Image 1 (cartoon, helix red, strand yellow):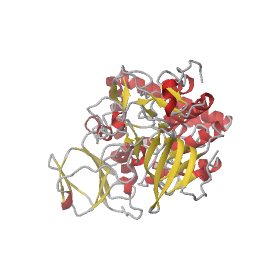
Image 2: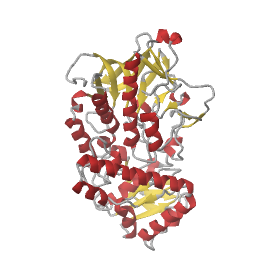
Image 3: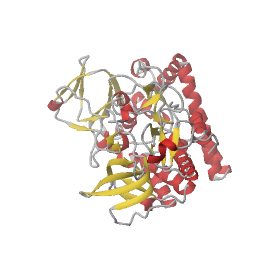
Image 4: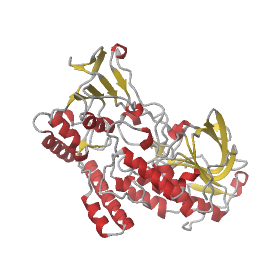
Amino acid sequence: MAFDGSQSSAMRDLDVLIVGAGLSGIDAAYRLQTECPDKTYAIVEARDAIGGTWDLFRYPGIRSDSDMSTLGFPFEPWDSDVSIADGESIRRYIQDTAAKYGIDRSIRFGHRVTKADWCSESSRWTVTCATDGTEQVFTCRFLYACSGYYDYQAGYLPSFPHVEDYQGLRVHPQHWPEDLDITGKRIVVIGSGATAITLVPSLVEDAEHVTMLQRSPTFVVNLPRIDAMAGKLRRYLPKRTAGSLTRWKNIALSMYFYQYARRRPDDTRSKLLHFAQKQLGSGVDAATHFNPSYKPWDQRLCIAPGGDLFRALRKGQASIVTDHIERFTPTGIRTRSGQDIEADIVVTATGLVIQLFGGASLSVDGEPVNTADKLIYKGMMLDGVPNFAFAFGYTNASWTLKCDLTAQYVCRLLKRMDKRGANVCLPERGESVEPELMVDLDAGYIQRARGVMPQQGSEAPWRVHQNYILDLAATRLSRIEDGTMRLYPASSERKTMAAPTREVA
């Protein structure tokens, strides 16, 4: 049951409060109103528009880094042959989906959650939102954070030596100026991740020259922009059937490639370098600029749709330098090897700042929750934190794949609670479980976030699989009351609660 966002009362009491109106928030709302139609819910969104990441980022060439059949909603299949889509198309798709299912009417825009406190006595969350210089307060029985994993206010910016000497313009992609004119400009893009690899081939269209300056290389693969098989399926089959088949085809392919890369890293490296060199031609050495020291999938692989980055380098419209920055100069950057790179504009595509739950502070009965000390249950809940879930997607596949499984599990959990007459759900850590890193990636933004990210456990259900099939079984087929997830009628009655049943929910 959707919440009427036009109501103006400062206090709301809901069954579920969703934080964030991006891909995962819209997905969560659809699952709730479809599978739990008796539940009241609302979405609070800090920004003034639907779309999350796809509304925030407006830099040139912004696009998906996963195929749209898996990044899109399974209940509203991506209706295009274009597999790697531009940011504006994705934003419009999210907005259209929210409008089609009436989800947009349940969104309270300009509501930034600042804190949320669980009260055991009332079995409710009290959620405080900052809005228009005032505060709005909601209470809810279940809090569902779909606010992404990074700080929307500021990106990561390293401390560069003598950056104050530089007389040109510095831009971070997270805050790209709408009126920035790059025509005829010499541009240096600092970085080697997905943002830099997206920017370079887009900027060369108008710039005099673009230099991609990276401290260390990244594995880059060429994927087609157009999914030919998806087009054929859509011509002969109903939309949902074609979308489902395309989705499963791409899930299977991505899982196969990931498993192959992890089991045969040397062979995978050799193949990636071979294909990169073939597309670069003889003018750029793939072994120097596209051969990282880490193994494939120790960090996320980057995509060059249609080989656009390789083509820009091959044609000389862009160049790539793999070196460390010694210092900024008045006219550009000097590298450690002594090379001076002239630049009218320096784009610092240097990464994100990890921030969970939109920066809101969590507490349980007034005690602050330190997320770094918590274990993550089934990749979506925190041990010792009642009636709370958060959407966190895959690092080796589309974000939405995992978020949709999380949304379906939350619905199963809520229905099971109703059946049992329970007010509280709580994952409880066993003594034998040992903490481990939640995300097994060497990426800088992950390493910088060790003091923020929760940990996974040494055994199920505390493992973070990064595997869609395993998560599908864990969220759809496993018992809700599995010996770790406990359901209680009220906080005061926990000690007398009967042992969890073994029936399948």
